[in-house]
Length: 117
Image 1 (cartoon, rainbow, N blue to C red):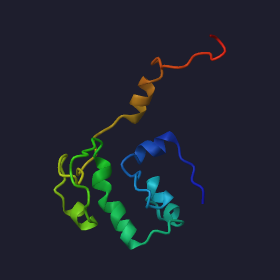
Image 2: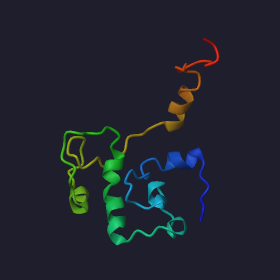
Image 3: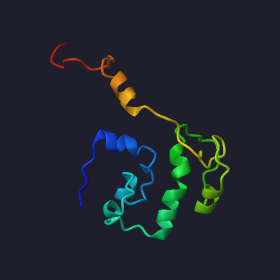
Image 4: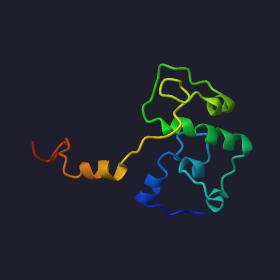
């Protein structure tokens, strides 16, 4: 069933939003409620991957120079630190609303009026 979400809902789920295209759409949008997950066809193996990838979702700084071929068990076991490739235990406190608000008066590059030459 369709779920209506506000910006506050998305902000509250920021570390639950999955970047894994193999997860069901409900997981990719951070669903946790059984009613909301009822239409998710993922089974126990994908559920475990989603939970294990939490450590990767918590890490906002990407490390591209480390091995990422981990199993769910390896992700769960850690170590969880910035340069382990297995993510971090807790996501940093981020002020998404504050960041978006700060962009309000920021000048942006544009092509201007294409009719004016």
